Length: 261
Image (tube, rainbow, N blue to C red; front, side):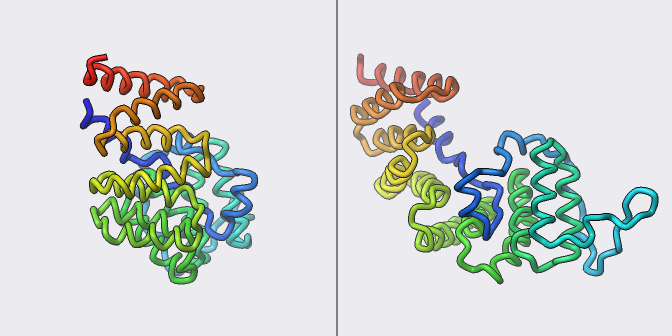
């Protein structure tokens, strides 16, 4: 059971966030992106081919010019996000494909499409988009975190860690980068480093269940099961999420049995 729980926590809940590079400040003030659960319904149409380099002028109903054709890249991003928010993932991807055909080097469009590819573990396609995006925005923390996720899909953990370190240098309080780096450290059994990252995340966002849970499991991996149990007990006092409560209680009961309690 213990080994199972370790596998669970290194699957980061903060990975592959829907990145809108250059808009992160506004997004943090008032989140406008759909949740990961809302994106899990993506269909197999994400297997679509790369859009042509020379775009065909798209036509709308009744052979009229598609009104989206002359939109700015930022407006195209908003159109795609609106499709997602209203449960139209196929249309969202089509909108991004069309927009990237028009603006092949735009980092925002590439970043958003890469995020969607990551949701379906299309690591090669995601990495291709992120490489283009990072050429013009080499220090964008959202792009770096998502490229780290793509690298991890290919087990290129050294490069993933470099991107996470880079993102944290640029934005030291970036929860996504800290959490994912902690998960990577934990997987590599660098428990002290993992604990430092998870504790920083918990300090920045005391209400994030995954961070508190990971702190407890990391203490147990460091050989301090009593501290781990206390962390889970404290966690259970404040969390209201039924799913996390069930997971934490199950783990806590296992540890109590190991301690003969």
